[in-house]
Image 1 (cartoon, one colour):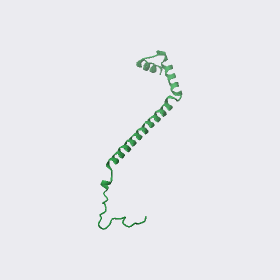
Image 2: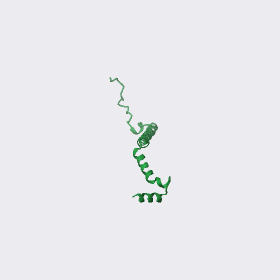
Image 3: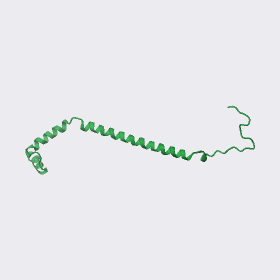
Image 4: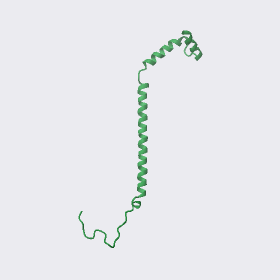
Length: 102
C-alpha cells in the first residue's frame, strides 16, 4: 500500500475515535440472533422428529414385523391348559383350573 501525501490526518485534525459501542448495529445484530436462534430451535426439533420416527420404526420392525414363534407356542400351551373351561373363563376359574392340573 503506497502512501500518498495528504491521505492522513494533519496536525490540526483530530482522528475519529474508535467506539465499539456505536460501531455495532443493534437492529441487524438482534435480527441475526433471533433468526439463528429460531433456525437452531427448528433444527433441534427436526432432529427430534427424525429420531422419534426412527425409534418407532425400529420398535415396529423388532416387535410387530418379526415372527412370534415363542409367543405362538405360549398361546397354544395356554389354550390347551384352559381350553376345557370354554372360550372365556373368569380369573377365578382359570386359577382353579391351573391349580387343579398341578
